[in-house]
Length: 367
Ligand code: UDP
Ligand code: MG
Image (cartoon, rainbow, N blue to C red; front, side):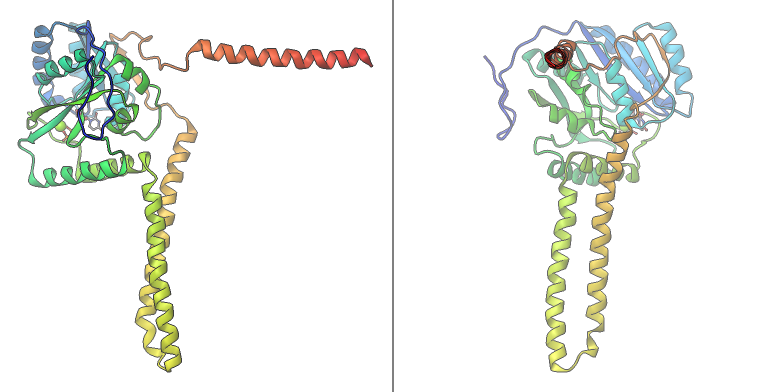
């Protein structure tokens, strides 16, 4: 038997080889991708013709404001392999991708950006890994042609920081481009948290995972939807959805500032006994400001978590669908706890309830 050994510290799994997937789903979230859609369509059609698996293309229109949906509808009308999920508004990349994954019906499912910056040919290598028994084959970027130095630098920091905050197993330089097995996807579909960081969630599921290295192309047309601000917000979501480290950060800052406060207090006492208390004004201001800011930071971080708990408590659906085309509604159902388990629990409850009632009736008769 083969074993997965991709990293010195990673869990080792036995690998169960699988047959070539009979059905492959390609999931693409799209937001304002009209400019690149014709190219994407041509490339996908070429790819579907050369691959052995039966292919379905699940495109999620994430509330685009341009002609994306018009082109998608025309495509789906001509090609029954194309499934369109038109969301009621813009829900963001991670939720759009979730919607696509929910409706994918393949044995193996590939999530890829709608601008096809990641080359489709890499999917062949991913399928090889899938057949070897890996549940996730994620694309790892060797280079990023055509990206600005600033984007490269921020991405570099982002991935290292995320590894510290989310999980040590989070692969570096890896986006959402990946192939996921049906088994892994069904587990992933049961995680319904509102603030999502899909990469982290896939890592959380575990199972054998492996990198497939590739060169990322520049965008063929259109422009990036991930501005610096969006990247920062995304990093923040990842950090606070997966770890309580920021909460501990609040505690450490508090402790540090506390130490400074003690030092300042001692200095103030010494100055008092020496009789020169007046010149302490500057240090007093510094300490007050430091303590104030530490308090505000701490309260802010607690507030962030509270806000997220509030969002989860509302239990709203993750996305709303305006319209679907060529979609089987049964596919999108979210797997729940197995029904047999639920009915067994109900059965047990009913039995104890019945026994209780009988006992009370017996007591009645005795009286
Ligand atoms: N996207 C989306 N909803 C959004 C923002 C982006 O569905 O609110 C899609 C977008 O259409 C693209 C993918 O997410 O297919 C990645 O976005 P982009 O290419 O702009 O990011 P970058 O590659 O520059 O990081
Ligand atoms: Mg892109």
